Length: 546
Image (cartoon, rainbow, N blue to C red; front, side, top):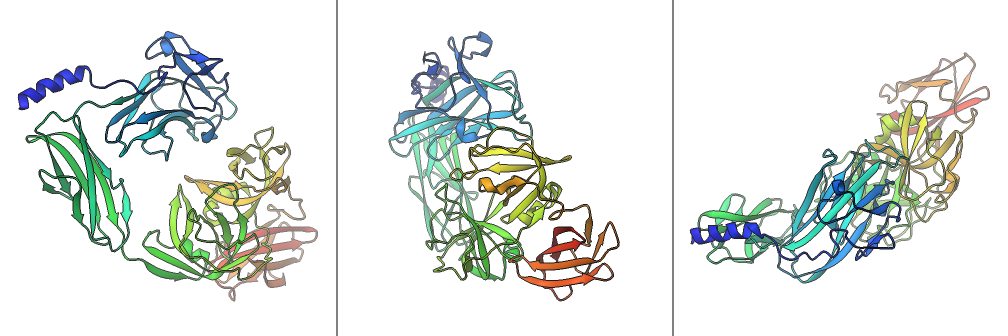
């Protein structure tokens, strides 16, 4: 048996795959400057063109030349739909030729982006093949997608140098014997109380005599059949491997991980500062007992997102299941929120688990929190989810604002990111200022880069005047403080008036300093806004009391 199989395997290696299901996968056929048979082409006919230079062709007589000009990743798709047969394993691949490291290519399933694979941006001026295997559980129409992603650290805005060549899309049946675990999905988390999980696997292209061995956390079971039942315990993780065996030799392997959650527990936190310091664990439900104020309601997506903040911090509510059915608006107070914490590319998000029936207050006006580019860059975590004003910055781009686009804004050598992301607001299409500006928006983070999200055209305005903002005239230290006192100094010795507000705008102190020292020992831990006035100059600074 082994000798027969080895001989057959050698013959199969010469013709290892079946007919290509991709139509015009070699980009040989074009009509009016557009490649035939592709259902989605986001590029113009000047940025996606036919190439016949043999250096940039991996098979056939032509390839596609792709000029990537945008960081707006959802606008760089080339897609084709193919019909697949359930239970059959397909190898999907694309040849990629990159000319620089400013971007990379991705191939993926257009329905959910899983599975997918990216090109290696370090392999330049050479062909590379990216591929994955996919086994549909039932007959389906699969959307094979190609998308291009900027490498943010390498991207040079405004250039036309992110040039790719792509060729030789292959969607073919794998004809070597294989085994694939089709359920559960990799990294699935089952609810607490789940006592067993059925592992479903399928085999294809068998020669005869093969068997399947299932290994669960190191324990093997030979001659396994599908579905294979695994007894489970709350809080445990499981690694499952299916090996297709030819005698004692594994000729195909499929591995998945899954886990069972611990029973949920509810932890009460008084404010968002405590919430942000809490553990991210899907088994822990947090109840925010204090009131939070809605600063913005996102309406351009279906995730029911709201930004909220309180006296110390802010957070984004991400509610894709629509748990919060109450129609909260900006300025509403919410008390008694319950939910779990997740991390999305560095941004902390709060996912509700129960509805809140009504606003606990309405018409709240949030105070203006003014920050510099340097402060956002170096202390951006403190402003995540909060409505802030970034002052004294200049846009490094010109034209009009576009959706899902990052703009660099600078204050001297300090450069941070202003991202336009709310597609249904009037900011889209308005002119980018060419003078020093202020930007009101929501503090966020993406993979370690702190950003500001302006909402409306009115959020981008002229820089605040010296009467409203004069960082260089005053200093406040130590900040943060845990001593009960802060020192406030200025460029002259005239009297200094100080007003202190909590983050909801309530004035908690109003005094004129006699010795440049402000006593804050009677204030609770949290974040406060300090308005400092001397003669006709004033500034607003953030004070953190630990």
